[in-house]
Length: 124
Image 1 (tube, rainbow, N blue to C red):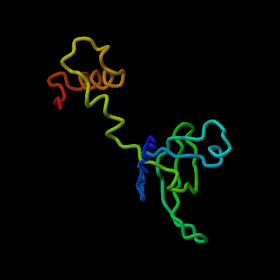
Image 2: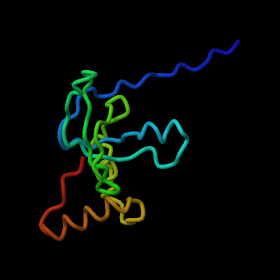
Image 3: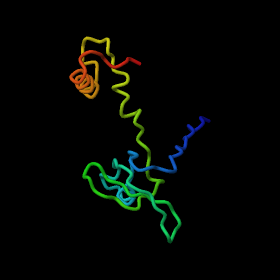
């Protein structure tokens, strides 16, 4: 009998600070099967609910710049800066064909070159 693959539980960050970028779920929309249930937000503040004692977060939903209050951290995941910058950090700087780079990497390089024509960023 074949063994079932083991599902690895993701341990979410349990405390977020102001300015953290997070992915969060609108729980009601998710469980109702409605679209638009997963959103990107920025942490504005944390607070403790006086009735439940649970730590909650107020976020700014970035797609619409809307305030979202009382988000349960169990439905939030940190969006690491390293993931957002991966395409730039791994851009093939020795390639002559900029088509090998993502548009974000090309844009960053062009912006950097306009600001300082004397040097390129250090290659990692």
